[in-house]
Amino acid sequence: MLRTIALALSSIAIGVFANAQGDVEFDTPDAATDALVEQCLETDGVNVLDGTDVICYNAAIFPEQFLKLNALPPASKIIITSPGGNVATARGMSKILDKRGEPAVIAGQCMSACAMVILPGLDDVHIHNSAHIAVHGITMMPYRKWYGWLKDDKAPSTASLMAAQLGYDFGFVMHSSGKEHMVDHLEGQNVDPDYIQTISDRMEIDADQHDCRVDAKDYWGMLDANHITRFLGDRITRMEAFAQTWDDPNNQLYKDVIQPIGAQTYIFENKYEDAVCP
Image (cartoon, rainbow, N blue to C red; front, top):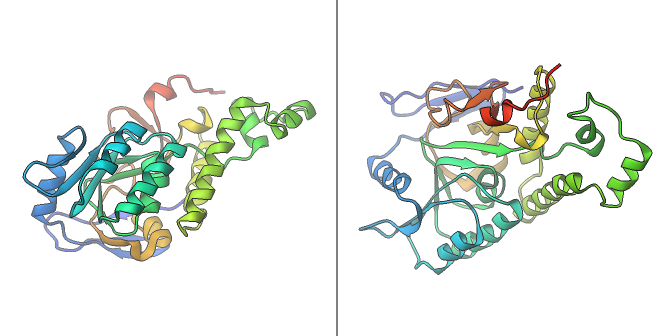
């Protein structure tokens, strides 16, 4: 498990993020971007911010929203904050963003498909200090582990294995289709699939060490600065000190509705209430 510590404080110009992988130097926040982000976070939907040429995408990732994005005029930048959406649908939005080509600011929540599809598909990214970036689900879990996850690690029968191989286990079809979309998308964007595999593995380890289990899709894993720079490299043109771990002072989102089970892994309490425990 990666151990991360955020040392950035508002009183210093550059913060340093340190863990076993190395150091990341954070950029100093600027007041102009902060004001635009604040305006966007208070503006629902997909719009050009009043008095600017900046697009605000503050919405879930569904066709209606990203088609509206596609129809907007060219902008100097796009601020993206989103709780996510369907992975396959997000690939459509990623293609629109590729075509538009504007610099993007990731701010506020960038959850689920935002972190899994949109972020690794961008080429000119500014990570804002308000960002909380987290992937959704132990996406890369194989069938045998997935089958026994809520069944005391019971092994699947031969009939269950055959049903899964033939595509008749609908639950696993949904699980594996997300994995396939992720791998195809990342490879298409020239991003190593370990961008997701590494986080999925970490969540699985944290979940295995915890007393209670929820559905594999209901785990969340935060992305830290070293992970992002490792896999996205020079696509990240600016990075401010953002939420790295659950107890990071920068982590302000969801504090009252989350059950952390690791430094960077958590479950929403409404799902945790239905957890399977010994």
